[in-house]
Image 1 (tube, rainbow, N blue to C red):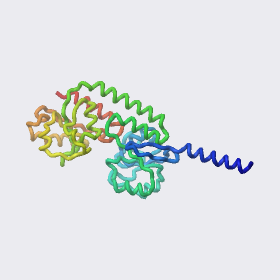
Image 2 (image 1 turned 120 degrees about the horizontal axis):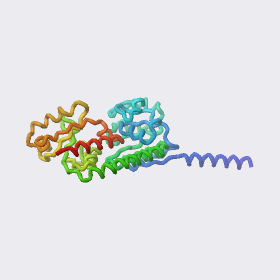
Image 3 (image 1 turned 135 degrees about the vertical axis):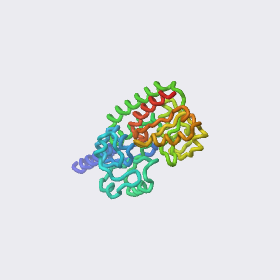
Image 4 (image 1 turned 90 degrees about the vertical axis):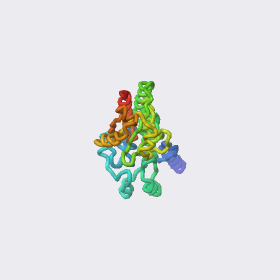
Length: 289
């Protein structure tokens, strides 16, 4: 009887452990299996950090990277590097349950090192705004904070639906999003900022390019002749970038006085605050004549 009872208790414990395990599908379709919901998370991009806070998992982030400043509470999270390099030894010492990365922006060589260490990787990547709520829900499942994640995801869905309705009949302006000036970088059709334009009723003049952040030359911009040039620049830089375009008075954007400074970090962060930036973008474009 004693041995049978011991076996029964052992099986019960094993079943309990099995029941506690968590299997989550990340944004790329990969399956991550953890013994339990993640309680120690390292985020290697500012956007992922913001997404984790939106999913209710901010208190579970034990480290992140530079420029992770949204929401304000993220500023108190320890830094172990930036987008180009992280301190692998500090990462190991933190004993994370999972590391969250952005496949399109994280250092590939360092991510390979993390993989070799056997630390589970969760890939967080959103290309269209309507996928933001889904991504928030997945992170909630990863961290065991689904109640908060679902509430915040619903709020994002509501805001996006309202924006789509409000600007559905907007004038279909063609827009160059200038993400850098020398050389000129823009965004292709698969980038989140391009989708923000679509929601505002506008069209990315380089939306046919599949590269997320292509470099283009002045001749290519002149050939496509956008209605609007939007300088998505760091603070204090936009007007300098836009001044360069005044050398080409025949451009529709220059001729019509449609050179727009747009210095919002949230527009390129790839977290929930990009919805705030999109709302402001729609308002700005709606005033364009």
